[in-house]
Image (cartoon, rainbow, N blue to C red; front, top):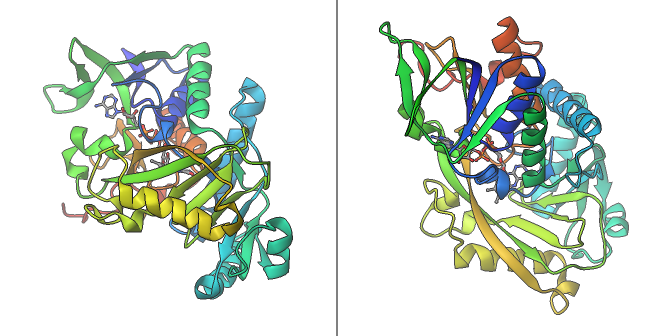
Length: 376
Ligand SMILES: Cc1cc2nc3c(=O)[nH]c(=O)nc-3n(C[C@H](O)[C@H](O)[C@H](O)COP(=O)(O)OP(=O)(O)OC[C@H]3O[C@@H](n4cnc5c(N)ncnc54)[C@H](O)[C@@H]3O)c2cc1C
């Protein structure tokens, strides 16, 4: 009998395992493939607290606490996940300049420091940027890292704290008591009992919890990596309402992702868990990067491309908390395009729910029941 059994070995599941095990809970994690084989092995690694889809004033405390927890974890564990707190720069054009100005105002009013940059500041930070860009939003405290390395670091720390982490073990369903209460999970070979379950299954949650089929939609995201170029900028970058994003890795490669709006078969990548790349998006990514930095057109080589599956919710905020009607089944899933700004606070608040039945920060913005009517 475990105190907590976590399903899913991405960054959220492994962080939950670390959090629960370090607080003395008998913890197990089951992952059907390898650790970080889902979105966490394919993410861009940008930690953008002001991301268009994610940010709202009510979650500023969560965003700030998350980064504190992340930095404390990295300091305590000594893990090298290529973390750089180099800030983030949102690049604005004529059409989204007003949006950018408003966003800076909204963030600052909510207690999240952001600067409005004019074209001169933009040009001095990114001399090769297209002259069409008119300004930007700089968030000094934003960061970047390698998501697969972070996931493995959480798993390693969880194991050291006593968690049992099993890979290549898929959960097929739940075990119930004669009163209907969920008391554990069923894998191919055994039933495993646990007092609490955490679903950290992101895009794949509806396979286990069909009621969430209309709430968490598998969504394909695509990215590419260039050959190394001289180190040009230490901050993470985004543009077009954060639909295109990029950063320069420690090795000097440009990781560039987005262009979901170009998907032909699945608009915005929604409704597919295929991890195949598509030519229209990959061509779009290359063209978007070269239009932003025209001088790279003859100088840059593309090395690798990939796709991954995100779990999108209707309001782009994850579900964090108890599943309605189930005191002992918790969920941390549906992170849409932004897992890093909330991963550690998710694990911390779920652990608080298990240990003390209340949380130090409100979970109302992330209530798993928010898409269901009270009656149903
Ligand atoms: C191309 C791309 C770029 C991205 N860029 C960024 C970015 O720059 N910044 C950012 O913050 N976020 C980004 N994201 C989103 C981010 O990667 C995700 O939000 C994050 O990885 C979600 O982590 P997770 O642990 O919830 O999900 P996942 O990593 O998907 O983990 C879920 C795990 O559950 C396992 N699982 C599912 N069902 C079962 C079962 N029945 N039994 C056992 N195991 C099961 C899966 O195998 C999987 O490993 C990006 C995503 C993609 C695809």
